[in-house]
Picture 1: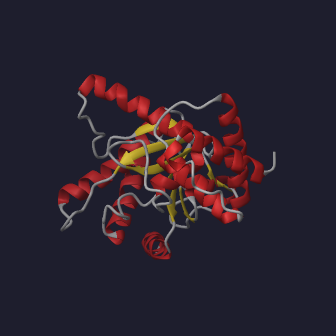
Picture 2 (picture 1 turned 180 degrees about the vertical axis):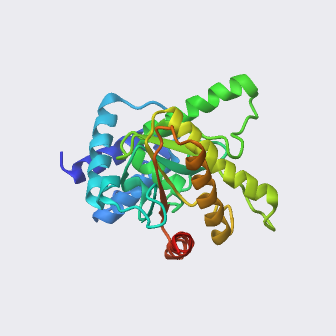
Picture 3 (picture 1 turned 120 degrees about the horizontal axis):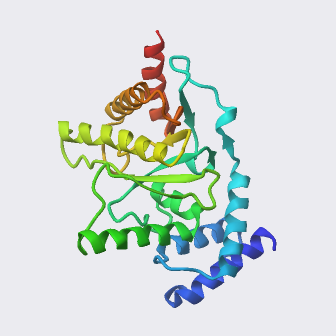
Length: 271
C-alpha cells in the first residue's frame, strides 16, 4: 500500500466503525486527508481494533513520523552547564529516546477534540489507537480499586508503551492547573511531576527521558517559573540518584519563548 492507500483505508474503516461520520467526504488533497484521519483518531473511543487495521495503521504512522524527521538523542549535544542535560526544540513525537513525558488530563485517555494542538492530542494521534485503549484499561483497573469517580491525581504518573512513536515508553502525568494566581501548592505539585516521572521511568529501566513543558499550555502555569522549577527538580533528582540507570534528561520545548527561557536559565548556571 502507498501512504495514500493506507490513509483512505483507515478513514473508511473508522467511518464504518463510527457511522455518524460516514457521510464525510474524503478530501482529494493530502493535507485534507491527513486532517480527517487525525480527527477520526481523536474522536474514536477506547476499543480494540482488528489485526489488519492495526497493521495498516502502524505502517502509516511510522511512515508519517519518518516523513516528519526523527531526532535521535545521540545526535544532540548536552548543555554547557551540565553534561546530563539537553535542550531540544521540536515535536516530541519525533524524538527517539527511552521515554517521553506526555502532559495528560485526569482521565488519562487523551484529548478528544478533533485536531486540537495540545501535546496530549498529538501524542495520542501518532502513537496509535492502542495507546488510548491501554490507558483506558489502566483507568478501569484504578476505578475497580478506588471507585467509579476515580480520576488520576496531579503528579502521579502512569507509564505505557509508546507504540508507533520512536521512543520506547510514554510517561503520562497530570500537571497542576493554575486557574487564578500561582500558589505554592502549584509549585510543589509541578516539582513532584518531574520527580515522580523520573522515579517511574527509572523503575522501568529508562536511561534517558524527555520532558515537555508541563502545565504551561492550557493549564496556565507561568512559563518562566515552570522552567525554573523543572530545571531545579531534575538537577536535584539526578544529584541524589547517582546510581540510577537514569543518566540524561532532555528538556523539550516547542515555543520560541520557552526555548529562550530555558537557554537563559541554563546558560546562567554555566557562568
